[in-house]
Length: 70
Image (cartoon, rainbow, N blue to C red; front, top):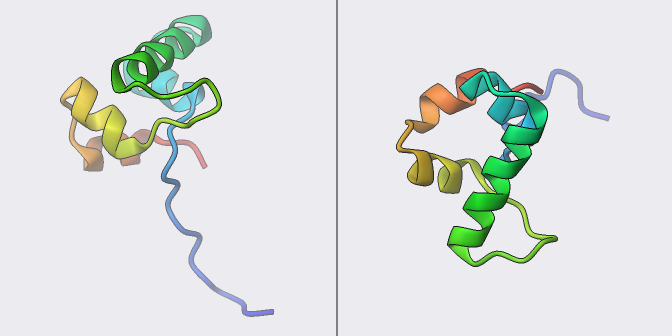
């Protein structure tokens, strides 16, 4: 097993991340992600990526990644 390997940055955004970024509560964050999925034509089981979230909201990826919880 290799030691001291950096943990890769996540690609998928979770409702908790949306809560941290927007300051909204959990249900509103989930609703926001559902709205993005619907606009992008994604199915229920598909994820929203950080880049998709950023292009939809107009936020920079650097800003969003700084708020993401590991």
